[in-house]
Structure formats: C-alpha cells, structure tokens
Amino acid sequence: MATDIDPEPESPRPESLWLATTPTTEYDPFEGGLDVDVAIVGGGITGLSAAINLTEAGRSVAVLESDRIVESTTGHTTAKLTSQHGLIYDTLVSQFGEEKAKQYAHANEAAIEEVERRIDDGDIDCDFRRTDAYTYAASSDDRERIREEVDAAKRLGLPASYVEETPLPFDVPGAIRFDEQAAFHPRQYLLAIAEQVHGDGSYVFEGTRALDLEPGSPCRVETDRGDVVADDVVVATHFPFFDRAGYFARMHPHRAYLLAVRTDGTPPEGMYYSTASPPATMRRYPTSEGGADDEDDPLLLVGGQSHKPGLEGPPTSERYRRCEAFAREHFDVESIEYRWSTMDYSPVDRVPFIGRIDPLSAHVYVGTGFKGWGMTNGTAAGLILADLIVEGSNPWADVFDPQRLTPGASAKRFLEENAKVGGSFVGDRIKSLLSSLGTDGVADLPPGDARVVRRASQPVGLYRDESGTTHAVSATCPHMGCLVRWNDAERTWDCPCHGSRFTHDGEVLSGPALEGLLYRQL
Image (tube, rainbow, N blue to C red; front, side, top):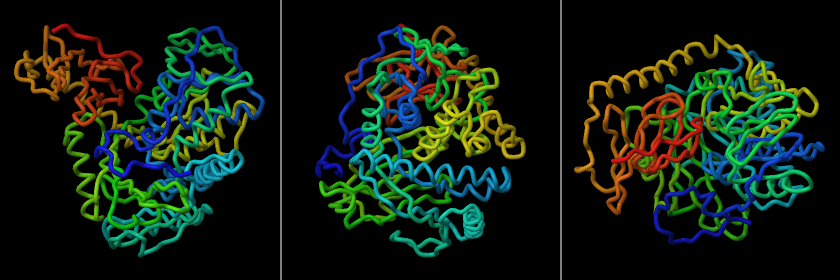
C-alpha cells in the first residue's frame, strides 16, 4: 500500500521521505565468533540484493551494517528504477564498444525485472509502478546529443524513442524516452528482502562496523564486535572500506539535493532528468492508502544541484534554495514537505566497479561507483556478484570488471579529478601553514554556525549549537588528511577530497574514513 503522509507536517522536514515513512529496524549487533559462506559488508541495496540471491543459491550469509540497514545512500535516493542513466549509451558504445555497452544496458534492464519479480513473488507493498523515463534537452544546443543517444540506445535493444513533447508543464527542445521503466519505495522493498534473508543460518546484523579485512581461504572480516570468517566476502559499503586497488583515485564523490513538494494540481506522470549542468531530476510519488494506482494528492520529488562536496561554491543551504527556486519556477508549489541530500561516487570512466575487488584477493568482491543510479546498478550488482561467487561467471560481468583498463575513456577525467583533490589538499596545507584560518573564532561564533580555525598549528573545526555549546574537533580527515568543510544545512563536516562525512561531534557518518574526527579541547 502507498504511504499515508501527514498533510500538514512541519515543513520541510529535514529527512528523507523514505526514512520518514518506514519504521526503524532493530536487528541485533554481531556478538562475535561466526563462520558463514559469505560475509557481506553493507546493508544497502547492493548488499541485500547479493544476500537474497546467495541465500536462494544455498549459501549462508552474514550482512554487516555499521548503523541501520537501508538508511545511508539507499535511504536517500530518488528511487528511480531505470536503465536510462542520463546520456550514457552513445559514450559507452564509442569508448567500450557495442558488446560491452549491451552488457551494461541488459544488466540494468534485468535489474528492473528482478525487482518486479521479487515484489510479485513476495507480495511486497512498496508502491512499485511502471512509468516512462525521460532525459530532456535543457537547451536546443543539446538536441543533437539527444538524437545520438536515441540511436545508440535503440541499437542496444533498449526501449528508446525521440520525442519533442513530454508530460512536463513546460516545453523542452527534445527528449529521449525509455518506455516501461519503474519507480518504487526502496525501503519498503528492501526491508522485506532483509526479512527474507535473516534466518535459517543467515543473518542481518546492525550496529556492527567492519574495520579491516584479511583475504584468504577462508577470509576474515574484523569488526568492532569480533571477527566473521567466510569463504567469500562482498564489500558493499558505498565506498570500499578495504581499498588496496586505489578506488579513492578512480572515482570521485558528488552530492545532490532533493525536495518532496506538494503542488496545486497533479504532478506529471513519468521520471525526468535534464542535460543541464548541474542536471535537474524529478519524479512523482503516490501518497494515498489506495496504492500506486489510486493516488490521492501525490508528491513531486524534485532536485539536483549536483556538485563535488566541500569545494568552493555556494553553501548547502543555498543549493536547497536553488532546488526550491527551480520547483517554483516550473510548478505551482503549495508546500515543501521533506528535504534531503545524497552522495554518490562516479568512476572516471562512468561505469560501476562490480567484481573481484583487486587482483590479489580471489575471494573478495566489490560493488561500488553507481554514479547516482544505484537502484538498478545495485540490484544488477547483487545478481552479478552472486553469480561470480556461486557459478564463477556472469554474462554482464566484463563491462563492470574492476580490473579493467580504459585509458581512452578515463585518462582525462582521472587527471582532472585527482588534480582537484591534490589542489584541495595542497591549498589546505598552505592555508593552515600561513595561519589564514585564524587563531580564535570562538568568541564571535554565532549559534548554529561553524568555521575552521588554527590552534597550536593544527586546524580545528568549531561548531556552536543552538544552545550556545561549542563543539571542537580536528578538521583533518583521517582518511588522507584533507581539511573538512562545514555543511550548513545538515550540520556535518564533509571532506572535499573523497567524500567522508562526520557529525558535528566528529563521528563517522560515511566513509571512506573509518575513524572519526578527534575531539579537541577548547
């Protein structure tokens, strides 16, 4: 059934719609001393998709989640189930060849079918509905790119067509439409999948942080609550916590923002993505008790403003305001019900990493780098990884192989992105050494504000909460030493280099950092 939403909430609620409309999970933490066939680190869509496929193949699994399952990246998605990932297929054909481009396309189409099959088989209520997906030209200059994408997608067997009219309430120069894509409520779906995984010798553990991994036969996963021994390990932690293959240099983070708005009139049917920079994204969400086919006062999810976190640019609060301005420009917005942000990692060649994590770890696998399209890519990763573990092969695995070499597709972007990281790191060091951060900053720090200052030659992050209490932490990210930046809308410290996030008290929210920001005495 569709979620019944309070029509007059405190507006906007600073939380994900998916988290606000589902119960909090209560799986026990790991207590130490366990042997299973497969240990899965990460309880999002990749980890749980792999887990259900593996258990159905007769493997015992242990899903290890550091916090609560389906609350991190998967809990902050737009929740589009589509093989249309912006304008990607013309690029894939030219840089990877038509055969591998077909693998990418067919894997993502199969992911939609996989979710629908499991929903039907398990009678899962998660607002699943088939709908069309559009990527539209933001200007007439992009019309030719749209046509080229349509041609490439058709050659790959995708349900693509070129259109100049869409259900949107504004004109577009042209668009590519994919028929029979889908949308759903990801937490409702995955919480049901987790219930199917947990039991009969397989486990879902929450509040259990993986700290290290020892590959071998068997493998050993070290957690903060003891070790798990397994024949195989799947690393499904958004960013790999075990990184001997340089994933930190092969993909880069980007943050985007979403609003759930109530409009005067019914929002347009379909899912939308623009060619603008940064792109806009939209989709409708049902809210009635009658289900996805009997909507009453549906919400419109609208957002965008994708950017590399922590680098120069407007603060987070301004990016939310820009999303709101876009929504009000194109729709008759009555209220903003929810707002949230999400962070994704994009590989330098635009294709996720799914397969063996590095050449020396025969029994350790990874699924990461979904570049904002994790609902299908994560589901496909679950299918591929289960096949690799059980059967030793999968028909789509080649294009996603983490060991691939794609200099033509990735060299330029690799240099650009790592130059940004290097520039940020060097600039931070110079800024710190020259004392331009300032040496005090406490006395004039207003409630709700934060800044980085220098104390005893060390950069310190200061945040004063609304009660007037000042919190001080090291401003140096423990992953690779970059200076964190303050996120004013979500009250977090964010690393601009590789995307780690921390609470105002320094606790890790998301990696690749495994340790928090050290507390500093004022």
